[in-house]
Length: 196
Image (cartoon, rainbow, N blue to C red; front, side, top):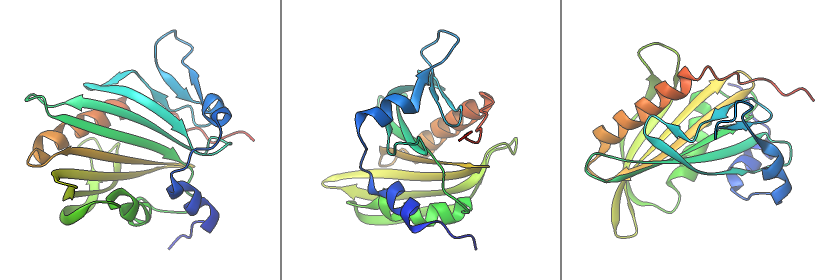
């Protein structure tokens, strides 16, 4: 089993953004004139829209750009919202499953009556997005919701997606997120190692 540094793990899951300068320097506009944001350190592209999801914001959680997050939102055909937070982070020496195990408590923090629907390896049909997935039914106060967690390893970088959707809409939400993953992979993301 690969071990992650205690400092990095704590920094990843503290959820506290550093000064605005880190956010300003963590992303740059794409050079093609589009509204795409690019994570400076990895080259990962975040278009304004991906498979029906619209970008809602971004955050940097360290001064070096080793942990960033971008939010997206979509609606299902009945108007129900689906939110997705996609993080790109350097998580040293950790498999997608190990990353998942560490991220799961943070994703489910503050929720009650959590029930596991599925936890398993995650693979798309073209074998270009392999990782680990967990889907849960839970309560957020009085609201019944569904929550999903996806983790992927891409060389130096690791990706984590957290999805929230209305209770009872799991199949529709998973189809929407699978479409997002397929479209995100189709962008031919470079996931470049930083040149420091």
